[in-house]
Image 1 (cartoon, rainbow, N blue to C red):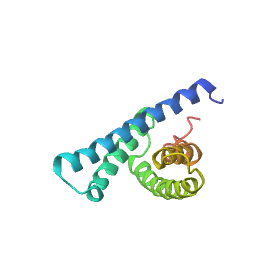
Image 2 (image 1 turned 90 degrees about the horizontal axis):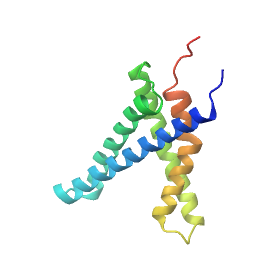
Image 3 (image 1 turned 180 degrees about the horizontal axis):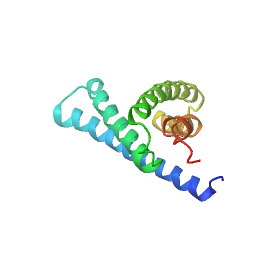
Image 4 (image 1 turned 30 degrees about the horizontal axis):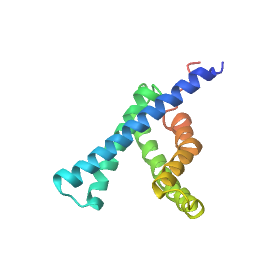
Length: 137
């Protein structure tokens, strides 16, 4: 039996909430490292990305997809692999778009590219691969 559109839309909304929280965590850790601790922006990028990725993983596992019964190690390994591919796609899509959308600031182009990759790759992979739950039949 298929899911209703409302269930799908609600889950997608939860994914947007988790992604927004992960972005906020990334930005907060990055800014704290640069402004309060005095780290170079290049060095501060890694702790920010790690904070965002951790929130993304556990938020998606428990809140977005409700996949806490799945094997944590399997999900974590698949998540890391998917995120590595997502990073490459984000970079490639950004390079493609920034060369063509010259009237918008690069930050806006970056958000657009990230959203395209999220909808076209990251969300479906998380939904159907990383956090896929075995059928109950």
